[in-house]
Image (cartoon, rainbow, N blue to C red; front, side):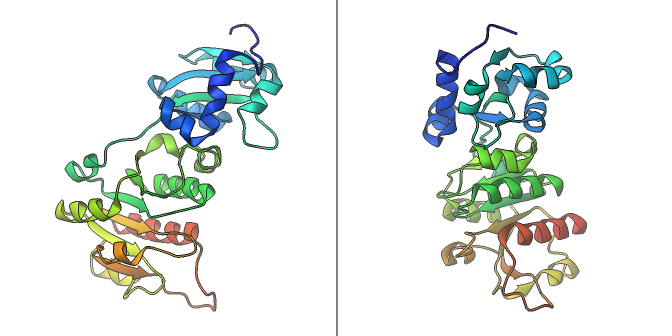
Length: 263
């Protein structure tokens, strides 16, 4: 532990810039708040620069911080609040390196299951998809150009630590990547409520054996038509009830869990 840092401290001022996407991209760093996220980050200490903790948080999480292999710096409550995007800051924040990998890693060594997001807008959904992909054994999540930043505070919180378990690809043009993946033997499936193929038919037809990449689109507009045309199939989830559609997070959970069972 070091001296108590205030909101005017140079380290806190630098870390506060990471609450904005431009600051994160410029520094190559992001913030992970709360015990779950910090614990997952510290499991790979090479990717963590430092941890900030209020005195109360340092006491409450003494077991976690005692084994930290990175500097742990005490901060005032006001300083911690400046690093948080929540109404009730948890007082525990890690400064972590961005986890981006080149898009080429997916074509040279495709994971058995991966996800691509086209123009996904809600950072909460971004985090939820990361968490679901992790739970279903996916190896990577691709955030296409125009998608929410997975390193924003809401997305990191929603991922519940799963951000640290997956490869992340950001900003790559999906119109270029999807054909390259198909050429590498990956089955690309676009989730589409009006798709011509029902999900159960993929199971019985053995088309989910892998490697598989699921493509999900914008919450309101779905997968852009020009990207859906690049997929091996547009897939719909059959529904017995009268619901007009499923929200993106629910659809992703069903598609990924079904694929996990088939593999």
